[in-house]
Length: 475
Picture (tube, helix red, strand yellow):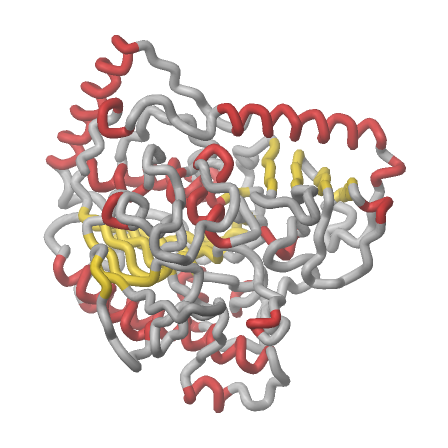
């Protein structure tokens, strides 16, 4: 089972909306007791690129503090190895294919993005009486109906495309030159000001403006995504490292410093104990030319950004809520970014809407390392194929099958016989040996599972019931 389908006739829809509305009103009556929620979503951060994940050459005390005051996941996955679909998944609790955005959204004004019929975490929180804010990267659509304010966010500050120069705030890749900095749908200019510091300023402002009601903040930090523009103090600190690790490390510690300033602000306002902070990278580290060919690390794992080997999709992830959740613990069960929405629903008491979700609440495993993963299986597929062949993967238990694999870490060559790459992760977590020939029965079973899944998510990609009519989401 990959989720739960809530089927409704017209009469049942009316009944559901009444229940959802009543639950929302009940939630609104107790907003003072409800926790705040901050989702820190980093960009192109490697699988092990935090001190608490084993990076002994990086200085990351604030990310480490999140782990010491919460739960660190050792086997946590992004739902996609590239930016936009991973973001669609975390905000909707659905596979990117079911969320309607299996590949990257465009970075030009007017570009389409995630379909507006999709329900976001922000819309659900706002309907429950939360104030909602987006800060940082969006990359889920670049026209008014797909930008943050139309997708449930009361306040938004950041860039709509895939990446920017952190000082000029112009799109980084190629011409024509395009300035990309927006506040609530209107272009703003902050010439020469360091974007990570601007994000901290905006986060402080959002928190200060919403101290008397619960808030949800989606802080989509555009770091350590290229360009690798760490501050001078951190560049000097890492002079002993060789490039590109040196440049990457400076940007990681710059980001950690910014996260620390946010956490300190919560402490000063007396809000830290009752604020759920979730930390996750969107996918693995980049090995692109624009990032000097690398700098990040997946440790022992093969793969990087764009790859469905572990290094492309296994990410650092932490949840911390000092007032309620266990602290300084590790969970080894398989978990995925789509799980955050149902997890937050259970922790905050906010009801989930009438949509099929692919995520499951992680609350049971947060409280116990002995509870089984809620996922019997999970699937990935790239939005656009490599040479006409989409990269895909399915994991069931210790077995993982990758179709048309791509190794962006260049750990070992791939040849024609590797078009179906089978791994037993218990025996080969580094994914260096293809054992497909030894297990044709497992290959057949996993292929059939994936084909069935693909047909299902393609049929279910676009909701037939408008969200404003069926679920009383207040826009």
